[in-house]
Length: 184
Image 1 (tube, one colour):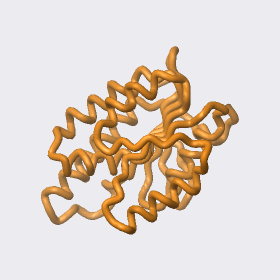
Image 2 (cartoon, helix red, strand yellow):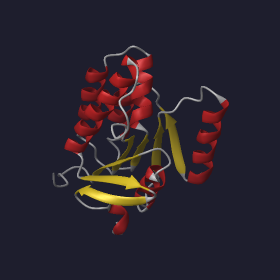
Image 3 (cartoon, one colour):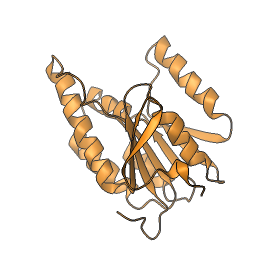
């Protein structure tokens, strides 16, 4: 899909845990001179996750405006993407976990998210884990999460201008281009 009129660009970044997805997403957004919005979907449910969140915040610095949206991502995005400020969503699979734990209709939430992203006026970068590359999970909830992650990633990839897969800190362009390679 070519970049459409009325929006800059949607980029989906996929990869495994600690692959470099977030750093690449931040680098893409930081090329833009306008104030960036970082949508955080993680919830600090334990000390380890609190430490991860703190490390991400420290790395980004004060130039970013952070908005925490653990559940109502479509509604939050529908407001934030109307401005021309670049928006980074990190991470879709954490959001999906929150949706499943809240016993919400994941398929409906995914479609609402797609509808909210489509009219974006500025740059949007989505970060998501690629969870389907490992072994088959041993329980129904984990298998449902893995399957829904695949559905979510496919849906977002269908909307994205660029899709990148990151492994060992190295991006592989799957669709479009690597926006980090070219100055804005």
